[in-house]
Image 1 (spheres, rainbow, N blue to C red):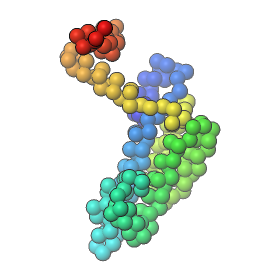
Image 2 (cartoon, rainbow, N blue to C red):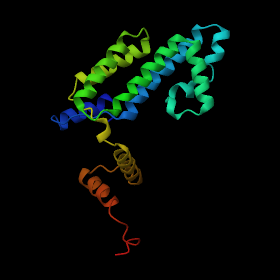
Image 3 (cartoon, one colour):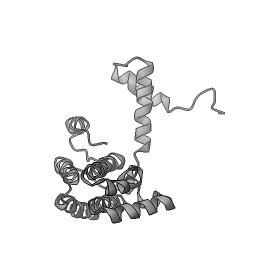
Length: 195
């Protein structure tokens, strides 16, 4: 799930023994927002000469190095050389993204603890807020981090399908009926089924 408090509270009240697996996309989205906040603050802080390295580099900073083309990598290298605060923030962002390469929950937790300390001790307020938010979510619930074994694309698709069913019916109120509609939406279409 994403890290919205209402989802977590509802799950804890209806399934108290459940373990939480926070969606990689949503966690990395918070990480990207922290990175972008550092970029914006630095753009305001520096003089016009230094600002030219930062302007227009939002996509470059939010992308992983592997996803950048040759021009993007050159721009990134120049930007990181020109601004040490952005350089530090970028290294924190890139290293935190490695959390999803762990298959072992104990090692993932240890890696997270190390990252959390680096985020906390960085002098970057957006990253300190990010570390505090992750800490609140991790400590307040039984979180499971086994990133490579959980793929949430199917669940996102299912949630979208349920929203479409509800829109078509102008808000189905009967849970049993909604459940049946969702289940039947996965049945093969009778007219397209060759059997």
